[in-house]
Image (cartoon, rainbow, N blue to C red):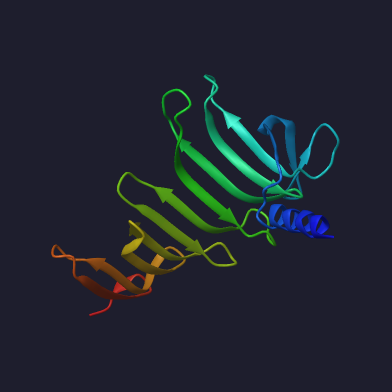
Length: 169
């Protein structure tokens, strides 16, 4: 009985935290139909990671799918010999395939997070350094709309209000 409980616990943890091995295949081995990814080999919805490699074999992009639905996309910086560095990570809405929810861009000294609404419009952009927000700006589509926060030369927070792209006086 104790052994059965341990086995069920492991299955739960592996399933819950996505620890089962996933297929990793070339992006050329899948096709997209009605916003879902399918394997050419059997026509079944694809679960796993599809990779796009450069001519030299380095991974340039990875797309993570579950039951044909894209969940995440990773873009890597050009690096030397198996030393890839993440440049961008895009998280998609699992209920609306190919609708971005969050984009995270990685720079040498900070990360830039962009959040989107259910229609794909940008709502918020943040820059984070060591986990702390150093810049934040609310958007309505392409225009700043709401509060922008940045740091002055002394590191104190400054706030600016925008309405429909124009700075409020």
